[in-house]
Amino acid sequence: MPTVISHAAVPLAIGLGLGSNLVPRRLLLAGVAASMVPDMDVIGLKLGIAYDHDMGHRGITHSMLFALISGLAAYYLAPWLKSPPRRAALFVFMAGWSHGILDMFTNGGLGIAFFWPFSHERYFLPWRFIEVSPLTMEKVFSARGLQVMYSELRWVWLPCISIGLALAAARYWAKRFRQVEMNRT
Image (cartoon, rainbow, N blue to C red; front, side, top):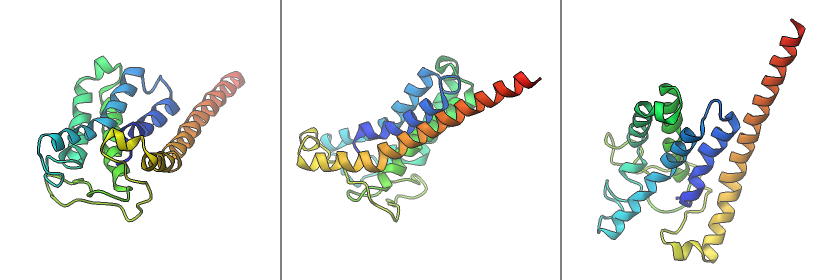
């Protein structure tokens, strides 16, 4: 997995890039939470749940179904999230879904139970260039952890920052174009 913090890069880039009119702060925070919550399954390792078990790390919580359930919860929480229900559901679903996608780009560990409960198989993508993160905090702050952070900066954060800036630029130019058009009439 990328470190849990790097999973937040996707909803942050999209939410900040689209702006608070489309992604209000509460919805943005819900997306960040949805992108990070799947890694709570590491608690199972301390409870004796085997890594390769459906309830183990990269199991149920990394599935598309889990992301859909998160999106459904956002649909019903939309008034609190200050967002239209479909937008809240889509944003939170995509944020949760991105977690599994990023983990499938990693070069270690077990694959992702992406299609659980329909398949118990673990999946990776053919391109596995993100360094897998250690599962303990002590190892995250080691020489190996620095390699992981560099990999995440290169393969997660820089692309997400680029996407966020591109979305913000598109939003700026669309607003500017509308102003020019209004001034013509």
